[in-house]
Image 1 (cartoon, rainbow, N blue to C red):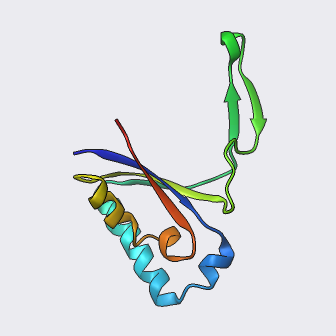
Image 2: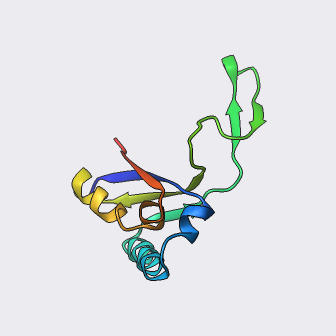
Image 3: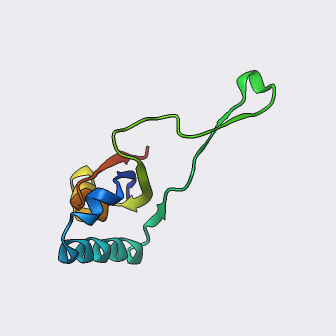
Length: 107
């Protein structure tokens, strides 16, 4: 089955303004995805890694990409196609709590 990388963006303020029943349903969707075998994680502090011309690694604290909302987490899910992946991710916390979820097909 095809795999998809998902990136959730959201912040505490958006989460807090979402009703408890909606949040509970979103966390239940995360639990269903885990039961299906999805690998789900909350994002920690990132480090950038570069190794120009293989001369030795260089690191910098912080994200390379930028967004209006911070990265909240990642998941690797399986779905038959993009439409099914979008449907699965439309009910997770970042999608319902005033954030956004990107869905990327892994090729």
